Image (cartoon, rainbow, N blue to C red; front, top):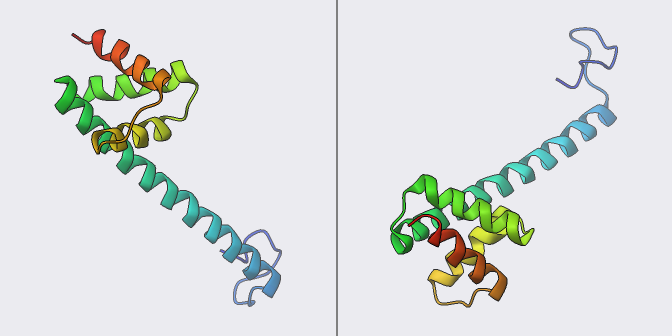
Length: 108
């Protein structure tokens, strides 16, 4: 992979600066994947909370999260984390709570 685009022929060992660049790219990609997995888990957990509390479908749970995110101009993953923490006893910001109630009311 490091030799592609560097003008080296097959069997030529990659240059050390090519390897350093490739390692850095892999580190960046690993961190992006880690964040994506964490975010996805929080969203799934929040959907579960909304399904249970709001007595709605998982599809509607995702829609509720998306609406709250859009109406509060907050990342979906952040809203999901707040919903999960709220289920564990934490307070929700007033704007998020207002949007949550409104979004759930639209589903019933």
